Amino acid sequence: MTTTISPQDAPQPTPRPPTDPRLRRTAPDDEPSSRRRWFSRGLRLLVVAAAITASFFIDNSIFTGIVVLFAIVAPFEKLYPRQKGQKIRRPLVTTDIAFALAGPLLNVAAIAAVIVIGGLSFFWLPGLALRPLVGMIPAAVLPFVGFLLFDFVAYWTHRWAHEVPFMWRFHAVHHSPEHMDWVSGFRIHPFDGVLIAPGFFFLLGAGFDAELAGVFAVFQIILGIFFHANVRVRWRWVDKIACNPEFHHWHHANEADSIGHNYGAALPWWDLAFGTFFMPKWATRRRPQHYGIDEYLPRHMLGQLAHPCRGARRHLWLWRHPIIAAKTVRVAARNLLVDIHRSSFRPTRSVRRETRPGSFSTNASLIGPSAAPKPVKLPLPSGP
Image (tube, rainbow, N blue to C red):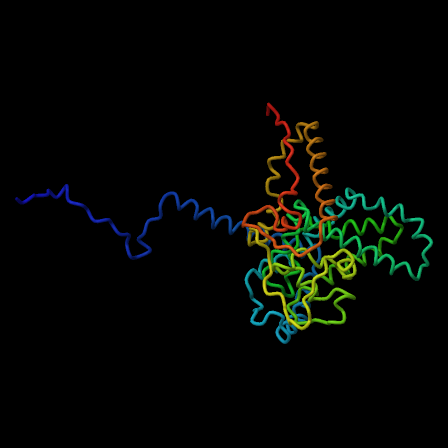
């Protein structure tokens, strides 16, 4: 018996899209997203261009300085590379150059952050306590004592910037480059002033000259840029005397046994004293192979500047409720002090950083997830 199938009941072939891409139609849902993506990209370029232009008017020597730095360091990176095969036009080099060119404008925000952080950190209080002793130090010895005190405070603030989750949000921007070279040291968030502000205000409180404290801060910045260069330099006899590129590259290394080490800015003495010094044995000839962080961070400059401030919008309503705002500030300050105390007294041992993309802090394993402070629930306002 033969079954007859009408043309209407016969299965129809699935229509295929035209082979010519010009004849393909974009789905209605995809077209706005594509337009938004291009609009967002163009808007970012416009904002970055405006920031670089403003930086030129603030300090027109920034372009000359970057060119001179490139002319001095780049040849050494080619002749004596630490990471062989790394190109000058490596991934995300444009992001670092954008940070460098926009530096004068970002420094305006950084100066404001330094003033706020330096005042609220109360590091000037122990400085005031030491002022009588500092007054008895001979003038010829005073700069050396000031340098030691500044570097000591810089060690602890740098350590807290890694091990206190709130501070790490901003300092993670500086550790996000996966390639170290002449320009990667410029990638730093302007609100990451915790590294310089406390030491500067500590010296001011202790009675040191402001110009001398400023010289120490500038010296630390220049030293950091030099330490980031992709140059194969290791002075074995200097490893435990002064910080060097090898010391700082291990600080940036994203490897199992180097996490939570080498916080010193100019002297490794504090790392040796507090158990955070790390340097492989000379016989192993081991060098850092992996840099960067495990957590998610946008690839462009504007995204990296905004990412640490994520979630701040939901707290804007607090200005309408002073009592709840005061409680929120008190709880936040208490949690910050708890994290600082935990970081200062944690067992200093080599630990493995276990994180996943999007995690809050890549340094959580330094204090352990079980040691994280419990969140405090605050009452929400009933009305607008």
